[in-house]
Image (cartoon, rainbow, N blue to C red; front, side):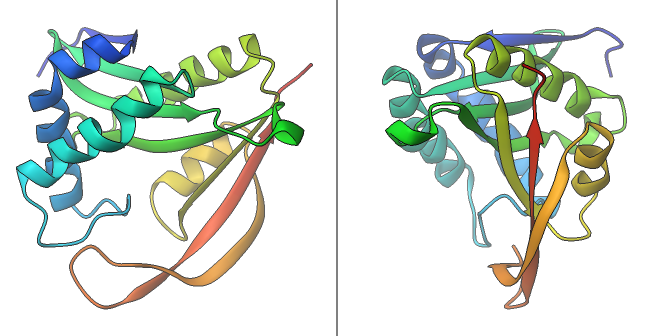
Length: 178
């Protein structure tokens, strides 16, 4: 494992040229139990399709920013800033799909990704960030430590990746200093 982690902002062409690596990372995260919208069975082609069919078009449309953690040029983490909002919400952005490859967790990568996202959101005058996370998940205290506050909890919001169990989600927000 590398001690050299860098955070980069990828454009659509960079994402497209690294689709295999993004697919592999997403696949590993889901199979490690990450509650990020996917359920078993979930193969590598499903993972690549998410990036190709969902994220890439949003990036090409200028509505999504992608931040990537690299270890020796290998994709090991990512988060997205979604700015596809209605005209009365141009001050707001949504944090999407924060994930770190299971072999690279507990190294501060998620925090670094979120700091890069917040900096970009501020530069884009997106002063309110929102997100949701599985209630009780390891990401919840991370978000709280970054200054996110809980708006509420929605019961039975999302299905577990490996079972029929429904989990609650915690909706959180953060107001960036203006």
